[in-house]
Length: 264
Image 1: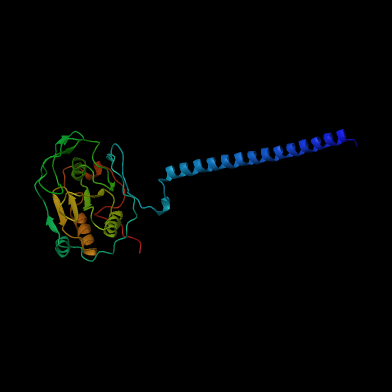
Image 2: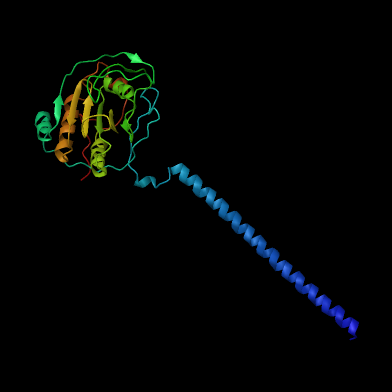
């Protein structure tokens, strides 16, 4: 083989090696592109799942028992409380006056009826004579606050309308420790039909329960006996006051009059 032929053979071999390197590089880029594409698809799927489930495992969440419908009321944009409550102990004191006394709560029954006039949404709050309110002028339908547990306070004109339809409302100071809030949530879970639960930073109590013209105000939360007082208050006053039929503002589930016993 002459010198010229050796040079051509060398060039041919170099060209073949370059083509092989280019082929390997192209395959690597294709594999990388497939990998990136798969990762993007997976990321999109994860985002869609998070948005659909609210960002957490729904099996680990509680239930706010929100009862929304044009006929039932509205959330009015208030955030639901879906924390899992702590089941309450079995009641020990069932007499309302005795339970309220042992819990150190102020019990006021058959207070003055402050009015039933309907007012537009976002109207200035009337000067209610009790804190929290127990009666008075309130928002027009369908903006009455829907039955449910909420993580923030609805507007008073919205939840006063709910009282008119026989509802009971359990309220607590936002400064109440988390565990004690969850104990109230657990009690609420046993009688959520036609009942509301929410924080109230303006009232002078740590815990309160209201129905139309009735108030149980507790300066301190004392555990099981406070739960007994709220339960007895519900049995005594739920669905009996307000002038509007409780069943006209529909609901489902256990009620304060017939609570559901927690599973042992």
